[in-house]
Image 1 (tube, rainbow, N blue to C red):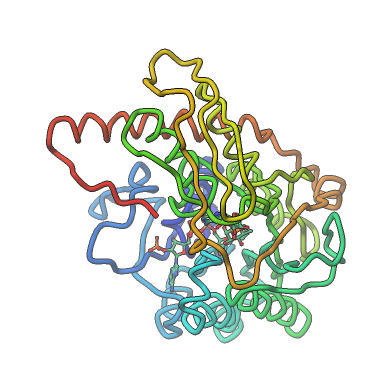
Image 2 (cartoon, rainbow, N blue to C red):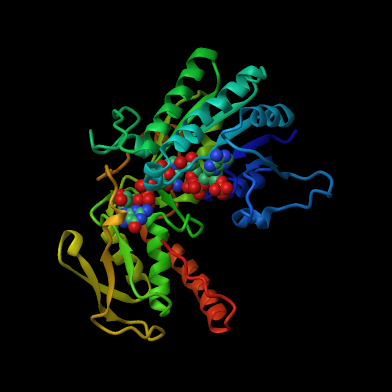
Length: 371
Ligand code: NDP
Ligand code: GDR
């Protein structure tokens, strides 16, 4: 019998990689997607199967984390062995603008999934993975952060995820459910959302190199993050649900890097060296060398400036995780290093931006929207 998984957030970065991973493991994968006025399935279109074909193993359903009856009906129909609850309004800065919606989708949404499983009498059958986050640690209490480090959330997103974390623990303890938190540190990839800082940087680097964009505007360059590759992290989500006991797990690389250093690495990856000058909101970066004959960039060109609109009302300064438990007990070993992640993202964005350049040159596209 094939195992059946339900992934909420299947159209997101992790949903797409997890779908590929589970299909390779011979699962039947069901996914929750939101109705949208435009197609929103770019990341999973390569997995799409015509609904008129029999015996599909990749099936999408309309739904929303704010709609309990929809979630209950779908879980009843699908009878999943495993639920991966990845759906969330996942942007920390945006959560300051839409805090109530974030609490509803990210916090109460998690309760809706857990309670649907309980109400439907599936507590012994269905295992649940909850996408928890290093943002729970927020204001630095301890370095590195482990499963035992106290939480101090610093955004409406993190506070909502804190509710989701504890309601998952509570349902596990109260009803004996196999429900686990993966406390994942930042993980990125070529299909990372365009407004998260790594992807914003790799896209802008490619666009600047190709002459499609003048400058990159960022906020806090001093923030430090523990960045891994999403492909390594979705593997761990699955491992968490195969473990003997339901537990909570930190997943991280154990190394931390500043936003400034990520900018330097991205430009350097395509042969452009930068010099940073100034401090605070007056900091800027200039091209000090361009060793790539493909790009027509002048030494001294200003390519980065600070825009205070990207500063957050409360910031998380430093994240660095200790994934010893996952490594020792589950044998998880990440395959990608940070330089390999940067390379993967830069190669992909250079290719994508060359396509954009072609479309623009041909007059087929004029939209240069980036945030
Ligand atoms: P993305 O933002 O790429 O994807 C989020 C997914 O959730 C999308 O499919 C989105 O749909 C869906 N979604 C958002 N709101 C709703 C809603 N109300 N109802 C149904 N679906 C909704 O996030 P990631 O893939 O990067 O992250 C996956 C999960 O892991 C998230 O919960 C995130 O908070 C968490 N996380 C992520 C980390 C990271 O570094 N990537 C680290 C730690 C935790 P649509 O495509 O329509 O917008
Ligand atoms: P984060 O990711 O908040 O850690 O949440 P993000 O990439 O948005 O920010 C990382 C750090 O970079 C700083 N920064 C900027 N960030 C953005 N987005 N845009 C900018 O212009 C910019 N300039 C500087 C930020 O201030 C921050 O310190 C991600 C999400 O995937 C969450 O869903 C997840 O839970 C956590 O990672 C772990």
